[in-house]
Structures are given as structure tokens and as C-alpha cells.
Image: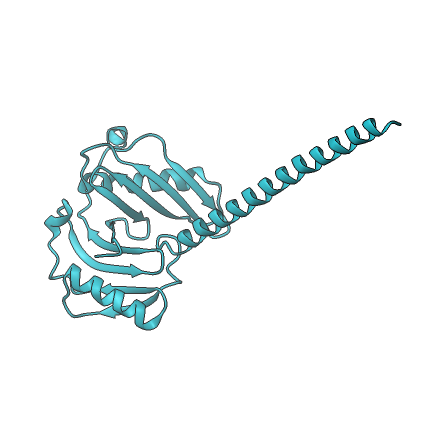
Length: 224
């Protein structure tokens, strides 16, 4: 074998090693990035009170507070206790229901604060009336995303309400959807169903444990 041919083989080997090393480095870097992104998503989801309230230390407040005072108190306790805080405000006299574009009754206001979440829940009670199921398509988009956890006997469902439909209208149809899901899912237990609801007026949550209550969700910016 000539020296020229030997050098050619060596050059090919060097090029192959360089390509392989580059590909391996890119794969490891991509994997690390995906792991980091996944961890960030998992952490944010874990702190979402819709899915995990056990993370939060509960502080019950009976004195009347407005929204600004509630946020200030929650942020202060979060710093002092160095852990996620949930403030439960039972005296809602400083809140006006008209602010929520819904003629419901404010039962309770909760403020959750953690590293990745600052959110207020306004729990609104509505008067329920009889409705016809055939009108459902005029209220809620037909596509309903859902995830079933049979081990915990819970269903997570996402709904999109059609534009300009008010909360006092669409809440009347949620028990119908709840019954349909319970009938469709093959479970030996009665299922708890948690609805995440998107509307043109904002985001809401609903659970079949209290079929006359909507939770109005308001995310708070860190500077507020």
C-alpha cells in the first residue's frame, strides 16, 4: 500500500470521526435541552393549582380585603414563609361581581402564589335553570379535549365556549357534558371531572363537585 493511499484512508477516518463527534454532540445537546424544557414544563404544571393544591400552604383570611391588598398579603407571606401560599378570602365584600361580567354571587376569592404561578380564583355561584341538550352546539365547540386518569378516577377536559356566550349561560350546559363523559368512560367509580374553559371573556374552571359554581381565573403579573 502506497503512502498516498495510507494518507487518504487516514483522512477519511479523521473526517468520519469529526462527523460522528459533531452528530453525537448535537444529539446530547438536544437531549439536554429537551430534558430542561421538560423539567420547566413539569415544574410549571406541578405548581398549577388546577392540578395540584397540596403544594400550597393555606392561610385563611376573614377580614375584608380588596384585590390589591390580597395580592400584597400573599406576596409578603410567600417571601416570609419561603414556600407556595394559598390565601382563602371568605369576606368578599370589597369585590364587585359586575367586574366579572357575570351576574353570579362571589362566594370566595383565593390567591395562589409560588415561584412560577401568581393567580387569583374568583369562585362565582350561579342560579341553575333547565336547558335543552339540543342547544349545546350553539354554546360550546364540538371538539372537547380530555385526558382520563382511571387510577385517580378523574377526567381533565378542555372546552372552548363560542364567542359572546356569557358565563351564566354556558354553566347551565356543563352538567350535561359531565354526565355524557361519565357515561362514555368505562369506569367502576364515579369520576371527578375538571373542566378548563376558554371564553371570549377570559378563562374559567369548573368541577362537578359543585355544579353551580364557576371559577374565574385571573393571572397576576409579577409587578402587580
